[in-house]
Image (cartoon, rainbow over all chains, first blue to last red):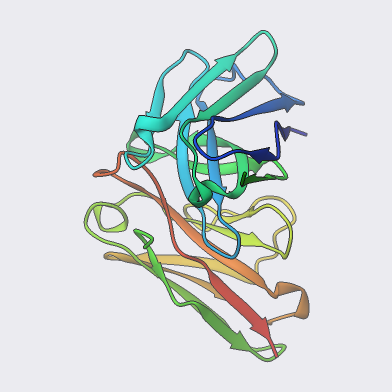
Length: 124
Length: 111
């Protein structure tokens, strides 16, 4: 059974960089046809896609966050990571990592496996 | 606001049928992209509920079904049970965003 687990600091100061890692177990991050994504959910609000990455390094970003986001993959550790720079209180959210499948038209969409999520609070 | 629009809440009595709608545009649902549905129980991560052609992951009962028409999609739940009380999200691809878009979520209350 594939499992994803987020890890990283739970408290980040304004203007600093949020860094999270997702460790994949029970399967290979290099599996063909799957991307690995980050999605966040501010307290009491809906889901927002941040970015995703293929094991080869192909990346896609939400345009509203692209200038502040870095996503990377480490196939040797079966991990992928997110960095979000210049954070503000608006970036306070539960951050989820997920496996995303490629559906018809060849677009990255479906999230079939999710991590449990980690609440990151931006506060001084 | 979310690129996909969902009603904030819906309710129904045990045993009843409810539907949750998801309205998009010509750059996502209307362009023919797949729509997926997730169930989020309080304090937990979203769980995939339905994916294209009414496929359901193992363990999801057939009381859950989905449909799509034009720029909208809907999730139907029949034989409502107390355990169905949760937030439900629709999800698709948007070719302007070049990425995933989610609905704002619908809170289902079982009366």
